[in-house]
Length: 384
Image (cartoon, rainbow, N blue to C red; front, side):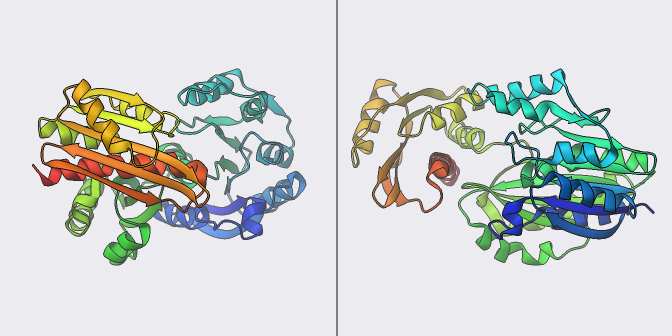
């Protein structure tokens, strides 16, 4: 049975600014694969100390997994530290640079020169492509070790582990267990509220159930280890049925489903074509709805809308486009922080509401859009 050690990298973790959830996830995932975990350690953003920790782990373990330190800034030292630990230089990979640029382009941005750092990895390393982030990961193999460096962002790290690292470990170390994952996406409930509903499932050893909170969305992850795929599917289906019974319409989709697609799909099932109006969101709503490619989306308009004028402007937009349903979102920055206005008009009537947002202001547009889309989805489903 192979052995492993985990090195979590980040000064912010050492200072207590964020909580390390990656170690818990990796420990459970490695256990599921049949890998013995010998030790976990947290190191700050220092090349020499990280390299020393890797070398120390190499003397005891077959597998060393690092998380964090793969970003584009000068205090993201993992690439250089991993290279130093095994005595090689870093090399620029043009194919990785193209991947980084492609991911950034999806957000309508142009990469800065500093982001080129992410295309430098230890010479000869095996690339782990990152389809959801800008930090390519890698595996460095020595005569007796596999050093696997993953992003620190939990969602990215978990996805790369299951899509690339687990299959690599199974093949490299002749591990025979099959691991399958099912993600259930929820909106409208807090992570704490969902935890109360499914806490007993979270205590299971196999399948395992975990929660991951995003801005306005909470994912429920079901991971099953079995001897074959059909058995893993059966185990997941049993747990999923129980979770769906408890969470009901808080669940809007699974795996690759998006909230915007679910909302427009629910509206289409009611025969509603939809007009959307946004203000102060930096086109967040327009981008999300456009990516859903819905046939029933009449238009998305952006305008500067004063407080308490959203519903009136939404009515006018609805008439212009002969829409049966209309969704409006406006973000106003006040002295007390972000103030969100939502308005929703359907054949059953119109409603409007205001909410304050207490999180980091840069996340307010994403939160506001998620809350609005979920309102449209649930309203359409409840009237079906």
